[in-house]
Image (spheres, rainbow, N blue to C red):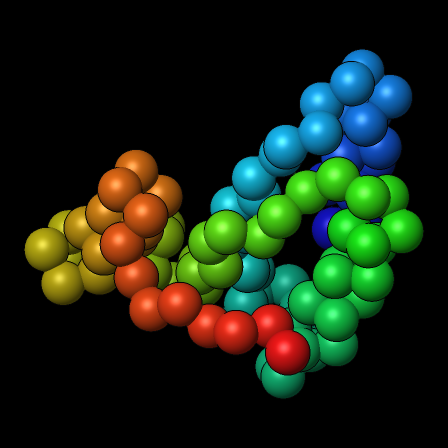
Length: 92
């Protein structure tokens, strides 16, 4: 996630004060169960930089569905990314 944080730093330097971040978690080249710690670290990075709001978080298995289940999986991700549909999760 370092490259995303670097892009947010660049956005701040260029005067962008509203940046919305859509994250797709990997799930293949990372340790199982590592997402919560990575997300906490990412949130701390957002706070330090002062730019960026995480608006969508979805797993790779849904977003990049290899089984061709568009209606059951990929369509949900599309609707979240394009239309903002989904289940709001408080970050408290």
